[in-house]
Length: 396
Image (cartoon, rainbow, N blue to C red; front, top):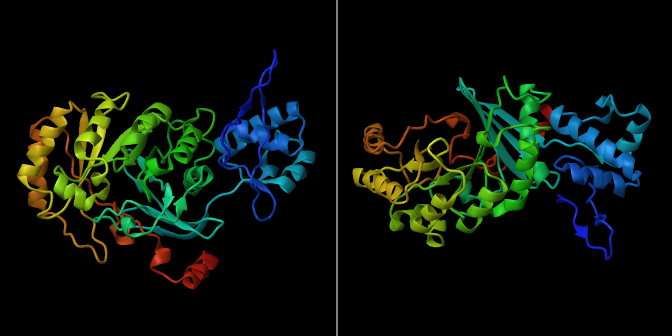
């Protein structure tokens, strides 16, 4: 993915000019326009020898059709001359992620197994509710954090997803829901959480660039207040996330003591609880109307005691954090060494936090029957043979 054009300083009273950059073509020689900013679209056209004034106009038109109308074919772009359609088709393509498998849970949750052009698999999940629809977007193929309660954490990290692959998940969901052209109200997909596979702050630039496309009012037009970035606590990147993206923050806390968090979230050995909570306190824009969400998976006899609940309250008060605590019943997966806390234990934990004036709802597990619930994402390619997945894709 190309970022905004670098500017080369020129001596004298001459404005800086964009330096042409190489756009990496696909195997068919064409350049994928998905994931490109307006400046990059213009640069791609100029690189293909389109005259500067024409490139500026066509870039604006392409931007509108790609991100506002959801077009994937140049022939659909009615305000671009038909004589230019073949020129565009020869040089460019507007892609979507390749769908290997799509599943629907009994509760309406949808999960897609997606495959990149280099044959890497990743997943996304859509959770419909009465008042909202949330898309869980992946940022990496695999994960490097090795959180012991999380199935995704047992995968090796293969690579970061590109901006095109990240924003492509949102585009594909819009395709499936029939929500083009973009509109601010009355749509099913209302919220996005960077809470799929991977740690988004370990793929910061690509996540930032993709979310800028999602938030652009002339394109996908999703408000930053409806986007949440979830991190396990990559402290050095949290300030940049606040300054350069500015979306809601969710933190995978899951424990209140060093010993337990070191075990279940190994990143804690690098950035401890106190350092993490200070970074949360410094995150820009937080207030009682825009609280930080703390994710807390409930593990039987591990982090679910009344003492743990009281310590959680103490820590949040110490750092004066406007907070909401999402209590997540542990979602089982084959080989997991943990069990879910009992309903009585979860209720007691929640009551203690609520009594301190901190919201602590218990999240209802969604999509468990298709392994789409929190902590269960692990590409089906690791559960099925590639030949079987190819057969299923051919039948889809």
